[in-house]
Structure formats: C-alpha cells, structure tokens
Amino acid sequence: MTSTYEMMYILRPDMGEEQVDQAIAKYENLLREQGAEELEIQHRGKRRLAYEIQRQREGIYIQMNYKAPATHVAIVERAMRLSEDVIRYLTLKLQERKATPEEAPAEVEA
Image (cartoon, rainbow, N blue to C red; front, side, top):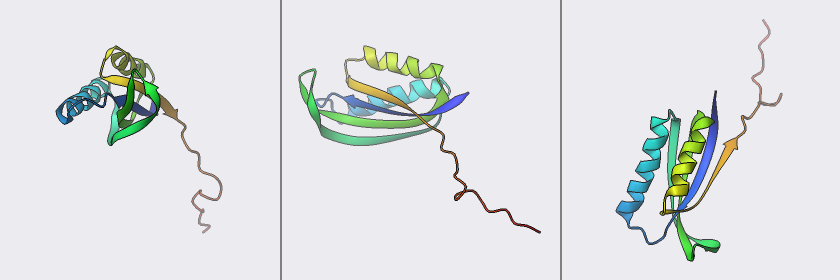
C-alpha cells in the first residue's frame, strides 16, 4: 500500500550548484528505483538556519513530495544519514484528506 510523503532535507551551504544538482538527482533516482510515484521536487534555495547545526549557520533546502510504500522511506533516510552532504532531513506522512459533506458532490435526483 502506498502512502503520500513529504520529505525536507538540508544540504551543506558550501556545496556548488553542480554538487547540489547531483545530490538531488541521487535521492530522486533512489526513490524512483524503489518505486516512488508522483515525485515532485522543489529547490527552496539557501536559507539561514534557526540554530547552528554541525557548525553551519545556513543550509540549502530541498523538498520532495512522493507516493511510495512505507518500507522505502527507511532506505532513503539511511542514505541521507550516511551522507556528509545532508545536514538534516525530515519525512512526514501526509494524511489522506476526506471530503466533508459540504465538499461532496451533490447528487442529482431524477
């Protein structure tokens, strides 16, 4: 069963644009190999961190939204944990939104 996930990760700020693109492609390919669907990537750019992490005050933020089985999230998170380029990562499982009665389509009576 696939679920929808949102993953945000922060790369070191001293990485060049080419290195950032390679890191994004690495995790994108890893997800696609694991069977992720509807993969969307947003490069949020360099931003100041709320607090110092690994002696860094800034980071390059990347957001990925995708659908995949739950077992595949651990594989990507392990790769990020072992990488020296990733400062932090966080994966959220998004809840499926259920339509309220006001949003449900009105039935037409014949």
